[in-house]
Amino acid sequence: MHHRTIQAPIHVYTEIGRIKRVKLHRPGKETENLVPDYLERMLFDDIPFLEDAQKEHDAIVQALRDEGVEVLNLEDLVAESLHTPEIREQYNDEYLEEANIRGRQTEAAIRELLKSIKDSKELVEKTMAGVQRAELLETPEDAKGLTDLVEADYPFSIYPVPNLYFTRDPFSTIGNGVSLNHMFSETRNRETIYGKEIFI
Image 1: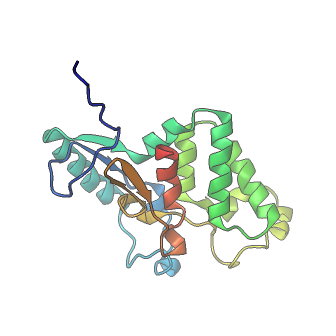
Image 2: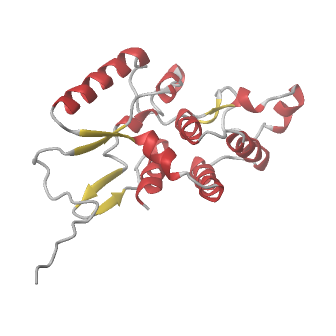
């Protein structure tokens, strides 16, 4: 009797073997949303030019595909995982918890903004890009209620996650499992959510 070996979905036992499949993130609006006065907080020295960053990314993707590597897109994988209203709500809850928002009114306004986004990929990209304060202000009166922000001159209620294209930092495959890593910098803590959505 022959026993068939069933290989686990994740099977990574080498750092130097031939790449079969890779998960990447194409730089998006989160890069555009870098603010000059807050570059150090975002762990950047300068603001990258998004169009050039995307061209370079696309060239790397094509080079990998030319070698027979399957390239998976991070935001597509996360969007695919948000296939029920319950999972979307759980995703929003975790995102808002990790965002460490000060003030219930601000959090409620952001929650409504996220709930209004019906397309899953658009929602994922929004959580990567961050939420600008101006998006939450429908009337001048709203500004008075949303005074529970860390800095009055900072344009974001939730800052972007521009380091996300370093996809191996917040989560990586090891053997038949995945390591979801707690990031040292608070700026990068939300990055782990995307790996959690894909793998758990």
